[in-house]
Amino acid sequence: MIPKKTYSNSQSCSDVSQNITRIVEPSFEFYSVFSQTEVLELIKALDVRREIPLKYAYKGGGAKIWHNFYQKYIIPKWYQPANVEIDLLQQNFAYITGSYQSCQKINIVDVGAGNSYPVKKFISQLKKLGKINKYIALDISQELLKVSKANFTKWFPKIDFDSCTVDIENSPISPEILGNFNSMQIKDIANIFLHLGVTIGNHQDRNRVWQNFRNSMDKNDLLVFTNEIGSNSQWDGKVRGGCKYHVEGIYTWMTNNLGISSEDCQLVRKYDLKTDSITANIKFLQNYTLKFSQWGIDQTVEISQDEEITIWRHHKYQMPELTQELDTAGLQIVHSSSNKYLSHIMVICKPADCET
Figure 1 (cartoon, helix red, strand yellow):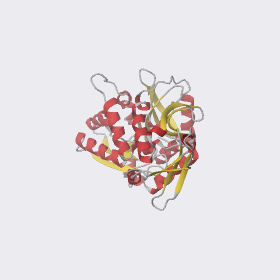
Figure 2 (tube, helix red, strand yellow):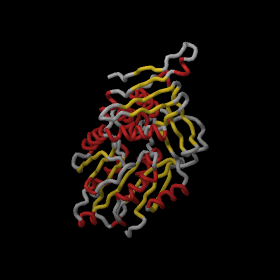
Figure 3 (cartoon, rainbow, N blue to C red):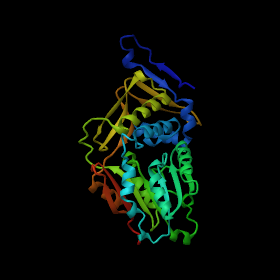
Figure 4 (cartoon, helix red, strand yellow):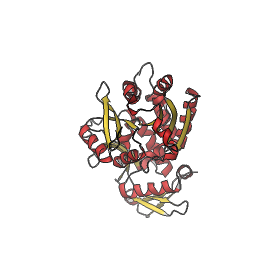
C-alpha cells in the first residue's frame, strides 16, 4: 500500500513551494510492524522531542537493513579481521566467567541480541568449559529474534535457546523470562546480561536503561556492555560505520514508510549540544502533517519547513560520567578494559547493594 498523500493551502506558483503543507499517512507496512502502544509512543516522541526512537528502526524491514549492514561491514573478513565486540569478549572472558560468583552454571542473557554473531566464539568457549546453562536472546525486533534463533540453533544445537521481545528502555526483564522460579536454582546459576554493539550510547533515556538492568539483576549476576569512549563535541564531521551505512538505510526506510517524499527532505548528521551526542536527522524542506489514523488513533503531527527529526543518535562516554550514571542506578563497576585503539570500552558491573 502506497502512503496516502494530499496537499493543502492553495497558493500562487511564486510562493507555493514555501507555503504548501503536505498531508501524508504512514504505509500499510508501518502499521503492520508497530503495535498500537508503539505507534502512540512514536507519535509522542515526534510531537514532544522531534524524534523517532532508534529502537524502532530494527523492526519490520529495518531488521533486514541492520542485518545486511552487519554482514557487510561488521563481520570479520580476510581484509577486515577485527571485530571490537568479539575481541573485547575474548579479552575479558576469564573475568566474566570467573568463579567469584560461586555458581556452577551461567545463563547468557543477550539484550539487543540482533543476529547473535558477536557471542558465537564466547558461547563456544563456555560450552567447552561446561558452564553454559542457557542462552536467552532478547530484542525489540521479532524479525531479528528469528535471525538469532536460526543462527544460534545452527551453531549450538545442543544448548538451550530461548527468546522474547523486550524493550529494555521501557521495563526490566521479568523473572519469568529468566526462569527464576526455584531459589536453589538461582543460587547455582548466574545471569550474565550482555548489552553489546555500543547500544547503550544509542538509547534516548540511558538512565532508565541502567535502572531497568539493575532491577533485573540478582546478587550473583553481572552486566557486561560496550560503548565508544571519548569526546562527542570533538567529532571531526566524518561519517563512518553505523553513522554512515546504517543511518542511510534507516533514513530511506523511515521516510518511505511515513510517506515523506525524497525531494522534500534531506539527511543531516551533526553534533547535538543538548544531548551531547552525534545525531542523524531528517531535515524537512516543506511543511508536513503526519496523520495517524489506525486502531482508533486519530492524531496528527505538524512539522514545519527546516525542522529536523532525529532518527539516530550515539553518545560516547568519558569515564567520570559513566561511573556517575552507573552509581546513580545502583550498579558498581568491577572491571573494565579498552581495545588497543582506546576507542571502545567493555565494562563489567554488579549490583552495588548486594553482597557477593
